[in-house]
Image 1 (tube, rainbow, N blue to C red):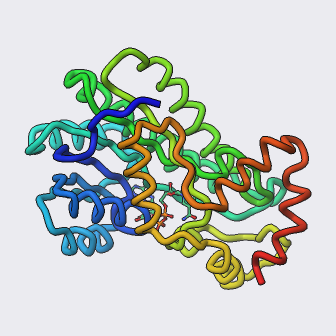
Image 2 (cartoon, rainbow, N blue to C red):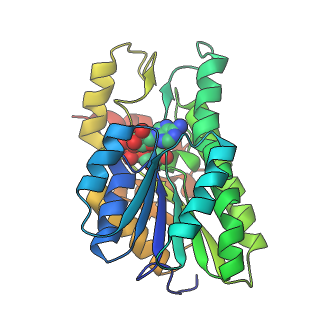
Length: 275
Ligand SMILES: NC(=O)c1ccc[n+]([C@@H]2O[C@H](COP(=O)([O-])OP(=O)(O)OC[C@H]3O[C@@H](n4cnc5c(N)ncnc54)[C@H](O)[C@@H]3O)[C@@H](O)[C@H]2O)c1
């Protein structure tokens, strides 16, 4: 863990900034005086975020799956940036709730394309700029589900494990340079992620999207604002792996103690947590 300034006074880039964690990080950094470059494919959400910012910003409707659009975006951000680019948060993400047996390749591809390829394209678009500066941080949002597996989240698990592997490999490649790579692993954060999910069946075999949303609301105890604070402070302190929320810390610890049977314990505890 090394500490260097990649936040204060630097330009920050955030994908998926029209909602949830991305919006909260944008607000937090803008409040600290950082110019922010924001994108999302939800234009209305993005406009709402921009309207609430206290400081300078640029924004664009962008689909993170579009590699060429990410390259153009990176070049435009570099020309606009009033200060060197400090942090690039590849955050946009989606999920699908379904069993492996019942799942469709289209849903799997959607999740992989946004969550994994969106992160890869964002990393490759901005990395040369950071390397040219010899400073800055690539911050890729994985999940608690990038460390532990969960039934009905096979596509999401695969995409988030992939983000972790990709980013950890990059981190080693960057050793000894001024550029760093970090993974973010949030537990439950109260955002629209479940609302925006493609839903087929939940982890108890239920087919009511509304019930999944209500169950999620009970367990997602970390606010986006709190998540933003943890992420920014983790990057400032040079943490390689940033765990967000006490649930993430507890379940990662459990998975270390019981690497093959953690879910047996989680299954027993879930009814108490969801009460
Ligand atoms: N909320 C949680 O409990 C939780 C837990 C672990 C990880 N995460 C991760 O945090 C990140 C942010 O999610 P959130 O919880 O804030 O959800 P959210 O749904 O509130 O926000 C996600 C944002 O990403 C945008 N987006 C989706 N697809 C896109 C695309 N193709 N191109 C551009 N933008 C796109 C959406 O429009 C939305 O604004 C995601 O990567 C998610 O997987 C969330």
